[in-house]
Image (cartoon, rainbow, N blue to C red; front, side, top):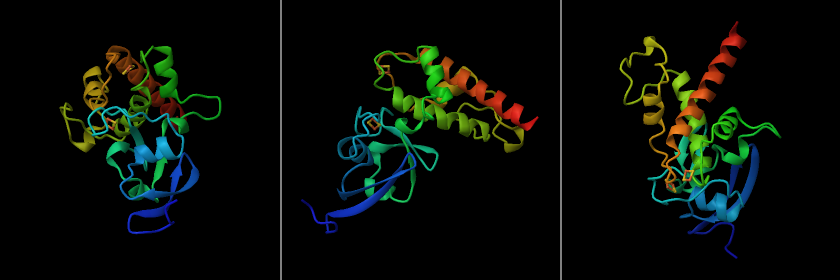
Length: 188
Ligand code: FES
Ligand code: FES
């Protein structure tokens, strides 16, 4: 058993989905391996393990990150959200529901990463962040229309080996439209 603190290991506390998890981790342990292998949070998937497929996407302080390229020790003090933290009790997150309703998956391996990414995409878009395909990048222009092209670009870091892209784009568009309707209603 490794000591609580050494030149190679440290005791760390991770805040995941609103709960605190304490573990002693080798400093080289990735956040992905800490989640899956140490904390049994296996919803986050390992695809390439080198930052190229997006299967391991989680939210760090609300922004998406590939957990295979994050060290667990560096995630201390951050708010980590994984797919296990998306639903509220029995109620699925609207993005989860849209993926379910529109068959935004086949084998489902990429799906947790796709959903985490989509949740952040919808927030990034609503905040007016441009993407590489946004024509008018001036902040005063407001959020660009969330076209299929915008969704494809913004979700391009998440690969799907089953090729469920058509349904994924539809699911993201539906969830984004529902979120816009909800915030408009709240503001009225
Ligand atoms: S497993 Fe992290 S990007 Fe592929
Ligand atoms: S649903 Fe199979 S990899 Fe995307």
